[in-house]
Image 1 (tube, one colour):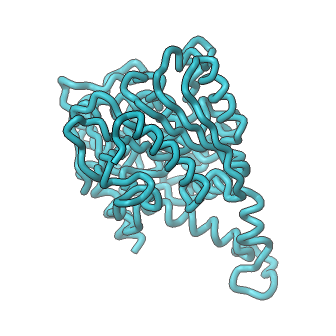
Image 2: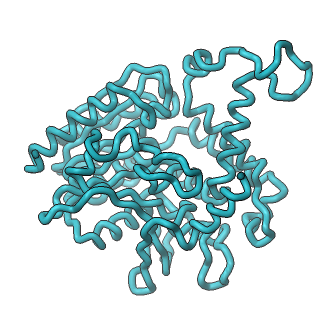
Image 3: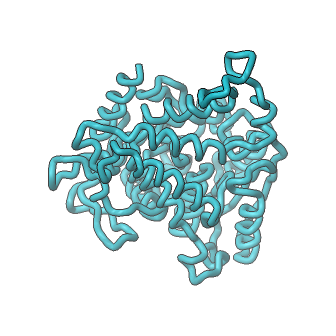
Length: 389
């Protein structure tokens, strides 16, 4: 089963099962690294119908290990879309009313150009020859996709974590193209602690003997052990101590006594090992390096003279920020600093802090208060946009 998933992941890199938009040499992607990426492609999914006025489009931005399959069965894992609880006919993001777009970010591994993609200059995977990708680069590519649909202004851009960073970048780079924005469980820059966790993960990948300096695909290898450890370490940051204790405590795994060895004695150990093993079947190790680096480099204030409010100067976009009390990866203080900057810029902004012990991953789960906040904000913005039923 694992080998089959790995094979499906490989098939999805250059020729994804989802729609794909290819840009030739006449439309290169300008990168913050100072180079051009050309040719390149973006894999995406859409749900619902674009109205005649092209005014009902919602762009959903995925998190670090997400993809474009936000509301459909994932072709690699066979699991439901990662936000199907929120998006679909009759749901909070109602695809009977809205045209929803979600693309795999550039640098990803499920159809958009990334390190596992074939480099047309060599006929081999890019590996580390792919230039470094930033959050702003991802958004530039998304803007080219939106242009393809003939959409001048998105009704809403929303996403959590790395997706929230993209939302903020959209609002800063293309304020005239975003009617409302919903950044969830995110920050305007990565903290030193978050950078540190990412560096541990990257070093785990690069220390794996099968990494081969990033050229593992040329050797028919994958640094599975290193990537699994990286995933295990990162997954801890997505949870909270209270949630871990409630779910696992110090319960033993399929045994009545300690083994006095290094097997997975505790349920939490078994759980993390499972998370690591299943992750390597669906995600490219070099993409993990590239996307974590993109998050590390994100610093919206630094891009605007060191003053975050200047990133949103003169914006007419409506904002709603959401944080979670138990999220220590992107704590509430991060969202409050964005709210203060938006207030200083004179923006229309609301803010919701949700009480939950589910940690950072709460934005992906069935959280009624989150859904109520999103529903209220979307409904209000839709009325203002003239999209009411």
